[in-house]
Image (tube, rainbow, N blue to C red; front, side):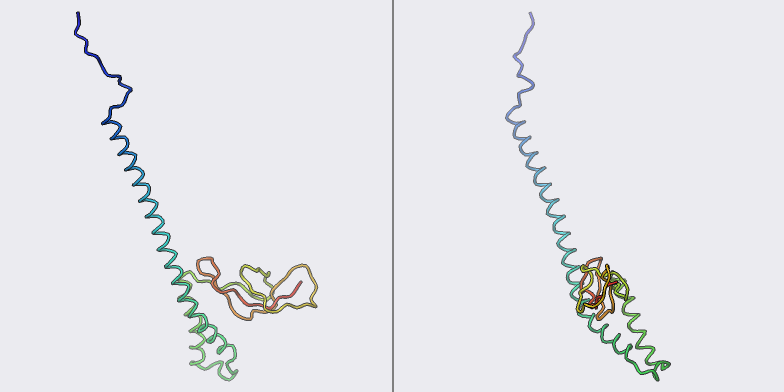
Length: 160
């Protein structure tokens, strides 16, 4: 005769095993919640940085506009003047620096196709005929920051 001890059903979890399973599930949920919080926090920080960067750049855009206007209306007799050439170089230098911040000028040259996502039509040539709306003249430069428009280009639109 063998001494047989009654064995507990191996499939039936013990009270201790149930507690371990519950605590493990709680830990997994807590880890997942923390990971989601960390990702959300990083995304919020990046959005705040980009918003602050856009606000700072928008304050510089009127300065660029004024320098460009000054260069465009410089008297012809100052064309070869070193000082006037230095002022003209300021715009190029500033735009190059801003390109390093992922700021790009919106293409609004005459003949470019009008895109309402990037261009703001200030004037429209009612008498023009054609199928496509194209830019006739850029009235104010527009810019994108990391592909998102921060200032639309103000343009005069015609049809071709």
